[in-house]
Amino acid sequence: MQNPYEGALIRLRAREEDDEPLLYAWFNDPEVTQYLTLRYPLSHAKERQFIERSADIGYSTATFAVVRKDTGELIGGVSLEQASPENRSAVLGITIGDKAHWDGGYGTDTMRTVSKFGFDMMNLHRIELDVYAENARAIRCYEKVGYQMEGRLRDAVFKFGKYQDILRMSVLEGELT
Picture 1 (cartoon, one colour):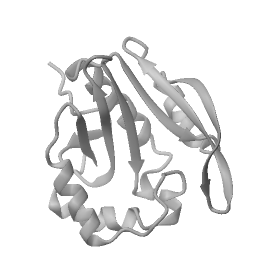
Picture 2 (picture 1 turned 120 degrees about the vertical axis):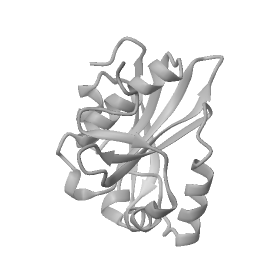
Picture 3 (picture 1 turned 180 degrees about the horizontal axis):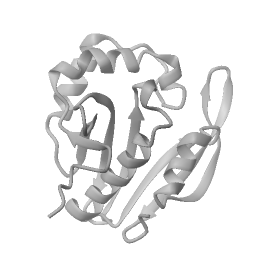
Picture 4 (picture 1 turned 90 degrees about the vertical axis):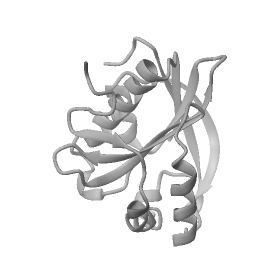
């Protein structure tokens, strides 16, 4: 039996109190949050509250830390939220906060692993996400694992002095590559 928390490069685990300093640094770095909805600085207290809330992992909110499988080093976070048992659907959010791990296949492996977890362990049929239209690296990653474009929300977000489009993408059970 394959471990549902492990991919080729990463392992999903619960968030821990010790993760707070890294999360604080990442989510206060404009380069990391450029394509996230965050726009205001976060305090250490806010990060601790987030970790506390995400400790209660369950069907409605499955929030994970992403660690390198070989070293156990924390490199990001991923979640399946707003899960609907009637529709068998959820919304995915991902951040590889450690910039040293950008463009190394960790995001792709995380997407594949958490999506497979959603289908195999949560009995989801559909997983969707929103991505900034200018975030070409993320779009390539999502398409690589089977996510398909569904639509464009024009001028949906104002950030860094301009409006930006948001793309909605999804993958259905059986479409992962």
